[in-house]
Length: 125
Image (cartoon, rainbow, N blue to C red):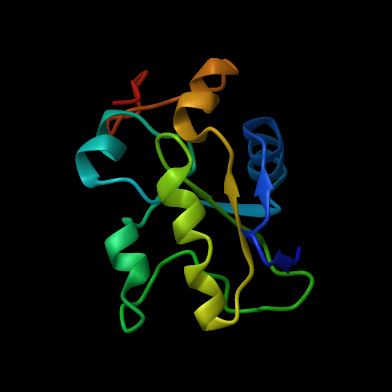
């Protein structure tokens, strides 16, 4: 993974799903709590953008090992705007991250699973 002048790399929802399924990525949902509770990708961790932006806050899910074997950090939001911004923030902690083009809207459009806070079928709001 590399960073260009345009910002962090971006990946498709299909690639994000595959990385998550294979256990080679940690998916961080940066939306607000009500959005996450309504519907998120199974296995996603919830870390709102505001918390991720706070460089002093402990952020669950950020890999401790920054080496090549460390899980890839993948950030997602509703449409891809917040996650693109958020993907630049882990770099301040020495961690490369990518964001998901199309966000959860794209996730749903690809027919990928979405669950609510209770584990039932969820919706993207």
